[in-house]
Length: 179
Ligand SMILES: C[S@@+](CC[C@H](N)C(=O)[O-])C[C@H]1O[C@@H](n2cnc3c(N)ncnc32)[C@H](O)[C@@H]1O
Image (cartoon, rainbow, N blue to C red; front, side, top):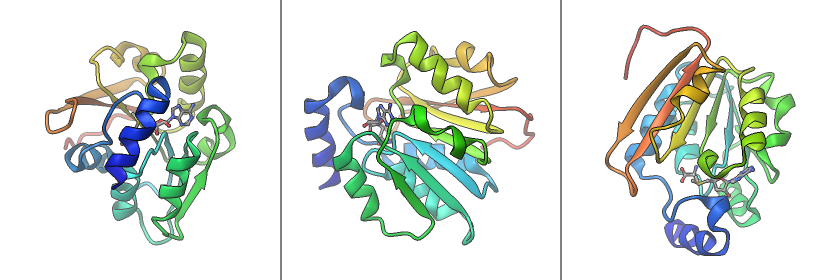
């Protein structure tokens, strides 16, 4: 059902949604596993919540997940998850500054490839205040841009998604463990 709602919203707002289907479970796991031991997580562009739910599975009982989602219909889906650790904010991710300053990790599903240069720059400037930044993308071209904000960047490829996707992970401190 959520998948159907996602497709419908894509046809209404194609540039804002960026892809026709919500993330697969495989992709959501590959993204969420990067939060590590984080307690304060911020998610941009949570959509119908596949990544949100995987983050909540990993978040400690006293953790907090704050989602910024611009689409009010998707916000209603996110609210239905009904988890006390989840805060859903129906707003543009560019207004996230106060939350990112306290975050251990920022996870983003924003279609950055479709954003204007200034808008993308603004989001990356804000997220670079977080120790870890995880970004979903459908093209392999964002690495250099993220590298300007995070000294350590790794890229994972996830074939089991429509379309196949890349997960970029930027960190201020290099981690020795790999997934
Ligand atoms: C590619 S979809 C990803 C959805 C979900 N994270 C997933 O993996 O299935 C992009 C999401 O970003 C949201 N979005 C686009 N621009 C946004 C903005 N400026 N601020 C907050 N959310 C935004 C869209 O409404 C959509 O839900």
